[in-house]
Length: 75
Length: 181
Image 1 (cartoon, rainbow over the protein chains, first blue to last red):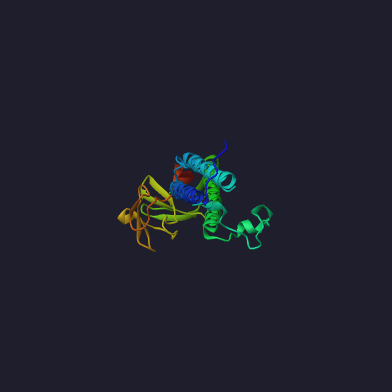
Image 2: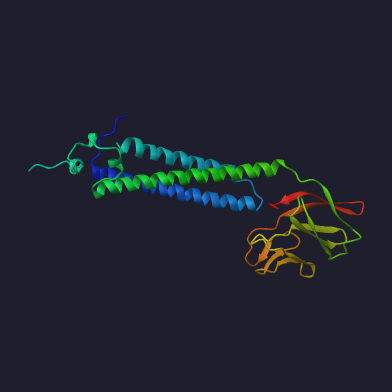
């Protein structure tokens, strides 16, 4: 799909939006990691796999946004 | 009035078009908006790497959990009934050297054993059978002697509990019931 060419000020706004979204996802991943570690150390394995899958989902979303940023927006 | 395209305001010092500029010029823009765009892009790349690092951490925990589930601790004799009176305690290493545990005889036929490292900052806990608790002297953490659950002080997680079997006047440790030693 061909994206319209954005003006410089528009690109800056979109970049800031992507950055905020990625930041929120990374903070979510940090919370997942600490909660999983806490649970693992107290002897429970129940949330280990779901948390890992959720974290992988966040990574996929982040890489998708990064791909848009680097390959589509930054051209 | 002619409005200039905001994307073509910048002119390179040598006046040549963007296509003829060296590659490094793209990374060191001349005006602020382009520079802001570059710095946001680089910071987002860094966040992408951080995100990858968190996933590696999650997979590592999943690997440790799988390893813990598949590896069963060996059964080993840790005490005899004669050497441990009611209210008495014994410290031993289980399942490997350096993983210190403490066994307490809480009744004629009742024994409990826990990992000795406090779940707060790893100080060794001391059994207090007369108060029905284990106490950590470093920060005054207190655990229930019957269950290993934290009762007061800084610890929030229970002590790792060992499975015990009593056969022929001897006490055997037969695995870890809950927690990480």
